[in-house]
Image (cartoon, rainbow, N blue to C red; front, side, top):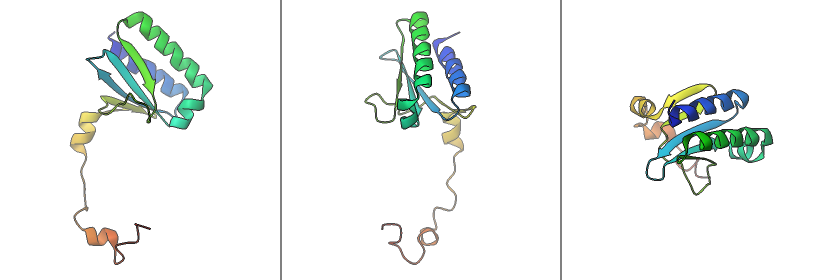
Length: 124
């Protein structure tokens, strides 16, 4: 099992225990660092049971895949997941390339329809 597969399996286990979380994963090849952004931030910072399970995953990963590292961060951390390779949310996995390629903007051209007669209504 590769390190990425191990992380994905570990995150899926965490998601089954804590379905309120969303995990964004990215690997930094230069730093040899696996980054996992966890949302929502307030739950990430306050849920002690989750923090213990996350620490267990981190400890096991470090022992199995050294010198690779894993870090869990929130949305305001200095380390950021800016181009996630996958997102795990509510037992569903999304691969970012598929999501971005299949996303379609429909009906955005008709700005007058979106804003109505009062163009400043949303600014207040």
